[in-house]
Length: 493
Image (cartoon, rainbow, N blue to C red; front, side, top):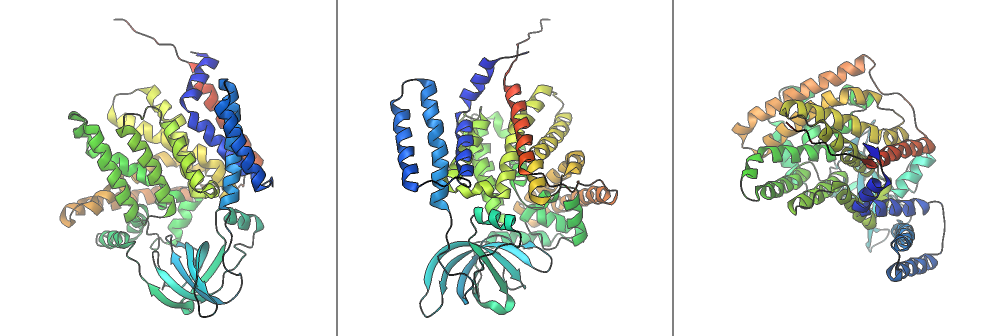
């Protein structure tokens, strides 16, 4: 093997959306530090697009297109920057949709909400403002539309940096809701499938701690998790396993494709299997509560599966970049959403590093290949997301690199068995539900054992500069790997 700029050029030309995505991200980030007149930015964008169209040289066109993408990112932030349509810190009636599944905190819960109307006098004013809900009490659940007597607080956190981060994520303020503030509650049927899924899984309970883990990992219900178990998962850097995310949807896709593997024996059977997997991904997303992070992960997997169905999945990196590009154009504030960052980085790491490493081994034994793939996926996903986790939560999940491969094996079994328990009839589903709970018991045992023996993460918050250096090194390694011009070797008998 030898390094070649020609090989690197071929890889870059095969992933044009990756370059455009990086330029768009640069424009979104620049909007936080540079203030330009909106009309001047719009004129500059139109001018660069015209110059890109009329330019003759390939390099010159790409230069104009690069400038246009940076300007586009800047303009999108200016256009989508949230502004409150109601006054702050004044008592009023608010009509609020509880969008996300509440997350437990010390003595209260936090959920995403959206104010759809408000009034101070007799007339209701329409609104569409994203807010952070602080829930104290048991009367409000995900999917409800509630009318409360309260106020919109401009300050989202006592920490200035975190307050600014939440504002960049699209929140205009926060609303505290206690049982005494609620005037009326309308239980929406939007999450009816989620509630039925929770009710069905609760019928199979045998061990309380293991069952709580199954509920969290399969249907996104984390209310039954005991504090000691949540702390153990957080200390070992594995708390992301308890929240339904792209990892869980990926497991669902793998399980469905594995069960439908015989369809590949018929003409175009792989397309039928991919379509059924696509349906199951969205059914599972609805069963788990259809949170914003789950929907974004489902969109990513949908694009990848559609590319596979159309026989154009040879360049998954370009397909992923296209998906992320469209999502950021729709809402540039996704860039500051931690779930979006972790999902995008984990999938990118698996595609850029994990898949090539697994393919390079080329072992034909199915069991060995599955175990090796699990090890590689766990390590690569941890390395790609480690700086973001450290910068956001102040914890380096180094223990996750060691025990993630072991825990992922149980996690695959828990999610896979949970899916089968959800979709199969009661009697047939019972063995899968019990098997999933047993695997969850083993998974909890590994996590608790690691936490008790101090195999945990290191309390350290990486600075922005350190995060930039980390991903610069990751980028250099990726570029070097793309530059390798592999020689073909034929072994004659």
